[in-house]
Length: 310
Ligand code: NAD
Image (tube, rainbow, N blue to C red; front, side):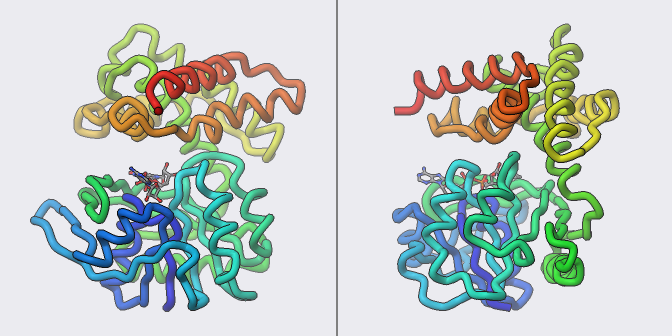
């Protein structure tokens, strides 16, 4: 299948490499010119548990892509989604399917501005990846993906996308309720990412704090309030909290610094906060609901961005 990865950073590269190795015609599309140039000149350098290799994949700036792909996999950061969609609009055909696997909330209305509903597929993934530098990624560990159509007519196509992903070793399953899964994952990111970034600690260190249990549950309660009001999604606080607490174990994610920490504290890049706690606070304000903790956390992360991102 002809597949375009739109947003070929760490995760886009992972999906691109695995789908290409399974025999698909994959192109990488990215706005970062130095990354595109490095991939075209030397191939994509891929570090894995077993060593390093160069993977030949054509990379393009959005304006340089000519051919219409059959499938587009979006992997920008949340704040880059609308720009990427606008940039690739000319290559989106009538039947081009779009899979959106970004973290964060509120992406469907953005997608609907550019893509017909029956061509939109939402997902969440537990795969991970790291960007070492332009043209260089680190792909270790295992993962899985859930995908679902947002238009009822798209169920067969969603299952075909799952098959395509699984043939590439991406362990995909068809989700009966992907919007619930997206909210549940947003709870993980809206607690651990945000708090570890503000407290300057890893996930295990956060879990050791006497305040951890209470902080977690207060934030999840606000997510649950807005999930119900906007998407009729029921998030029950205790199971969601316990699922997050299982990650404190050093054998799980305890030693890991979340991606928001890496982006902001280590690399001085903007964060996805407006699509996590910030989305909850914004929607709550529109609906006259109170989510003061998410509002405060969003302001604190933006303040940290103002200090660190030049
Ligand atoms: P990424 O930062 O690696 O790449 C995202 C975009 O940012 C790419 O277009 C990339 O080229 C660009 N970019 C990165 N560094 C840049 C730089 N220095 N200068 C200019 N542009 C730069 O993001 P990612 O980790 O692949 O995440 C994509 C989406 O997937 C996000 O929504 C993220 O939350 C989600 N996600 C990530 C992981 C993970 O392990 N990385 C896991 C699950 C979900």
